[in-house]
Image (cartoon, rainbow, N blue to C red; front, side, top):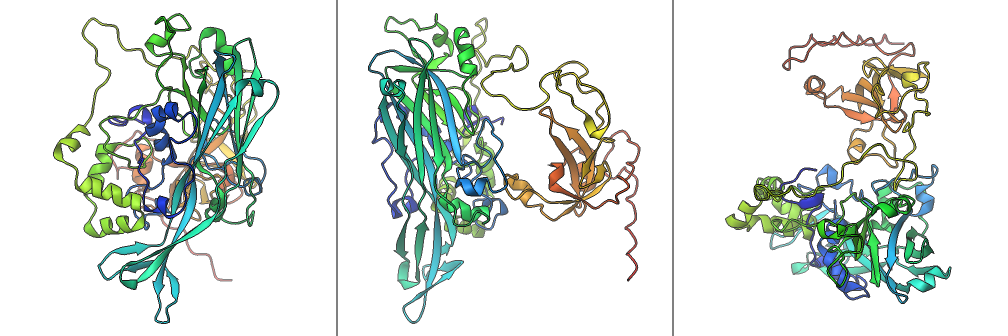
Length: 574
C-alpha cells in the first residue's frame, strides 16, 4: 500500500502494556528470554504485526468493521477449521488455519551453533461490564456510565503472549525434534468501578498450542530449519460461530528466529548458488523475511562477495509474519504511535480521528484502552509532530550518483520449485476453458495472447445449474468460513452481475453491484464492483440464462446512461 509515512507497508504498534494486559498474567515479559538482545532489533516491527487490525478507525465498538476482527495469523482449533474440509494453503496468514509453518535456510558458522525462536500471538479476552444491583449482586450490561461521567462498554480485548525456545543446532541435525508448549492458561479478573457503580469482569479461555523445531543438513554448513506451530485444542462446538471459536485461538501469530553462530538466507533474493534450496523451502500461512543489519565478515568483507554491503542476502534474524513484508522491514521514524490499520497512512488517519465528534471520541475511549490511547495522542499532538506526517522522501541521492538499489525485477514467470507456488494455469500445458465454453489449451497468462477468448461481459458460469453472467440477478451468500470481512456485511443482499472474471490462478470471480445501492449506476460507470466466487452466489435469474446486457457505450458522466428498467410487476396472488 502506498504510504508516505509508514515505510515498507508496516505500521508502528504500541509497545507499552495497557490496562487489560496487566489485569491478567501475560506470560514472560518481552525481552526476558533467550535471544532477546537480537530480537529487540525487530521489536517495533514485530509489535506492528502483533497488533495489525487489533482495532480499526473509527475505533468504536459500534463500527461494523470492529465487529469482524482478527483477520491475520489466526490459528483456530483444527476441528473447527476443518469442519467443511482442509483449508487451502497460502503464503500468508489471511486465511484461518490450525497451524503455521516456517521453512528457512541458514548457514551454520560454528559447531556449537544454537537456534533461538520466539513465538508471539494475541489471546482474546472478553471484557464484560456488570452493573451493581440493590441486593449487592451484579448483572451483565452492554454499557455503564459511572457517576463521574466515565463510560464503560462490553467488548473483546486481547492479551499479548510469547514463548521462547532455544536448542543446539547439532541436536536437531541428529534427528531429534524439539517441541515445546506455547499455549496460555485461562483465567478471570475483576475490576471494581468508581463509586460502586459496578465492575468489569475479564475472562479468557485456555489456548492449547505447541511449536516443533526440526532441521535437515543440506550441505556441510547449510541447514533447512522448520518451525511449526499448531493449535492443539478442541473447540467447544465445531459448528459454533467464528467469534466463539476465537476464544481458543492464537491471533496474529508470528515467529522470530535468531541464534548464535548462524546466519539466515533471504528467500526473496537468495545468493545465486542458494536459489534452488531456497526455492524448495515451504512456508504455509506465513511469510519469512530477513531482519537485522546485513552480516559482514570480521575483515569487513561479506560472506558472498560483497552483496551484503548493498542490501544483503543474509541476515542475523528472521521474521516470519502472517502478512507479506519485504526483507528488513522498518518503522517510519515520523510515525508517533500505533493506529492498528494495515499499512498505516498516519496523516489521513490522524486527520480523520481529529474530525470525530466529542461523543464519538468518548465511545472510542470507552471501547478499549488502546483506542483511548490513540484518541488522547491525536488530541494532544503538537503541530511540529503533525507536520512530519505530511510525507518524507527517502529515495533522493546526489546528482550523478547511482540510484539506490531497489527490489529485484523478476526475470520471468515463477518456476517449479520456487519458494511459493500456487495451483493454477501457470504453464501452457494447463487447459483453461472460460465460461464453460468449449476450447483447446490456452497459452500461459503472461504470454502474449494469454487472455484471448475471454470476454468478462459475455462469459458465463454455472451456479446451481443456472448459467450466470452479465445482467443476472443474484443473492449474495458469503462463505461462513474464510470469507472476506467486508463481504460478510453484504450477506443476503440482492445484486446484479456486471462481469465474469477468470483469475490467473484458475479461479473465477463475478463482479456485482448491489441493487439497493443508490450509487450503483455511478459504481458501474467507473468500474467499482464487489467480487464473489460462484459458490457464494444464489441465482435469482430464471434458469434459461442471464439477461442480455445492453450494448456497451463509451464512458460518460454519471446519469448519461439510459433510464433504468421499470420495476417488475408483482406476481399474481395464488
